[in-house]
Length: 402
Image (tube, rainbow, N blue to C red):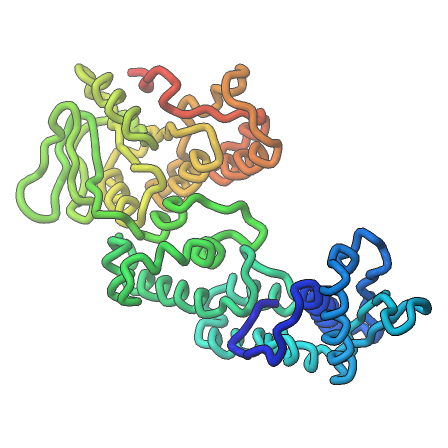
């Protein structure tokens, strides 16, 4: 529950405001669950409580504010049996959530939720995760540390997704699109949590990195060529075919129409340094193609790669080599799910090397996320992966056999 546009009628002592906000939240949670029981009191008797951390003057000043809140029907309060007119405060409990919210100058969760539902209604039913977000808010659960008061950020993220959906298979320069949509070239980058949730696998899914989210959606810093090493010619939509020169060539993905050559294998590589090394290692060989994914492949890259490989012989083997970490396996899963020619199973290349014990130790939760992504890629035997990660650049380049 966050401060809204209301203005508090009273400037409370910090300790009083802390107690009242705590009680407002407890009252709202009771209301959400439908419970008729009184919310738990805030017990101020312990000497360690916020109340006894104040000096005498601050406690006295707060006493009058508590009594005023009681008179307005916002709260109930209990006082010690001893102490005369200066009796200490023992406890506070909310009586009326709405009155207390008004006193504090904030909106209740219910009011914020109604505003969010109204503002986001045009997108309901079109984006599955949005319904899950609203459901979480209705239960007073925050999503990526944000509650219903943040609904305008979610609206802006949905506007971004709408704009991208209107241009399928294309990449958009992030700051150009941001300036067009919001007259603010950096606005989209401020919406990363919302874009991650709305385009992800679920509210509980592991957070993705900035460029994993953005590139998956087709948001890039600048248009990137599709870079290829090997022997053959890239058939172009316009103009003459492009011969793949040594050590590699880069062309606009949307210009690719096919490939003329006889590779027996295709190896996609995640990182630029390793791609350069692999391109050099391919000298003197004409049996394979090495293609740089530039990290997480974007929609334009995927369209270009599919065009490049769609006419290769059915027996052509496809491999992927990336970092042995969550992002590396997610890239492999995305390649398998949307980039491979029909009927082709992408095979891992050097991505089980941590089975021999090499790598950096990570948490079991990271290992589990790696395994889940590997299985999405179709690599069922990777359920034995240890809790180790290893960057691709730490390995010597080895290419598939002739």
